[in-house]
Amino acid sequence: SRKKKLLNKSFLVTAGPTFEKIDPVRFIGNYSSGKMGYAIAEELAEQGAKVTLVSGPVSVSTKNKNINIVPVESASEMYAESVAVFSTCDGAIMCAAVADFTPVHKEVEKTKRGNKNWSIELEPTKDIAAELGRLKTKNQLLVGFALETNNELENAQKKLLKKNLDLIVLNSLNDKGAGFGVDTNKITIIDRNNNQQNFELKSKEEVAKDIIDKIVEGVV
Ligand code: C5P
Image (cartoon, rainbow, N blue to C red):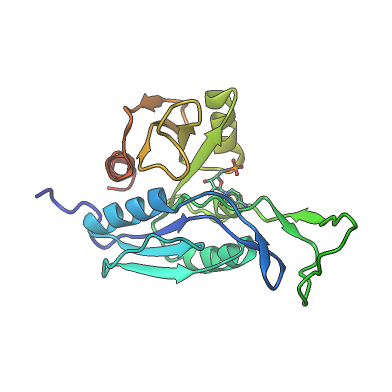
């Protein structure tokens, strides 16, 4: 077996979608399964790290004793839990598909069906990765994900700099078998010097290993 390379290190991982409440029975969500984030948490723990996994609503799970799951529902809950733990961590990996907008009013009662149209006013959520980028000290590593549909490399590079990330993992939506719901992923890892490393289509577990190997280079 490989030597554990992240003993005595602690990491924050965000995973899954967020659900933004409209009324007691309805929400705005997305198709994120949480598989990539859970695979990353498992691999970090495999390498000896202690992991806080701030997870949106998912059907995947883990029994690993070194992974502490903090279940959240909304983007604002995910923000609060992530900011609360980040200062104690050596790094954070932002895998969650956080909602970009949330309803301005969360209705207390179920909205009744009627014949009129229903408009829901949405306001932007806070960017968790960008906030951790502001809080980051020189000994902390921050890794984000980007799912782009056009000008992928250029947009991912911009996102890395804007959010003050150390690495960004680009998933291409143009590749079959990559992205939401599926068990495989095809990634490019980009660093602050715009070095780009392309990987083959692999299982999300193997992709997690590639990402953690890259992180080990940065923290050990
Ligand atoms: O800006 P965009 O949503 O494409 O950025 C994706 C990256 O930022 C991912 O790492 C995602 O987890 C993170 N993010 C976040 N909080 C948000 C939006 C995105 O942490 N509100």
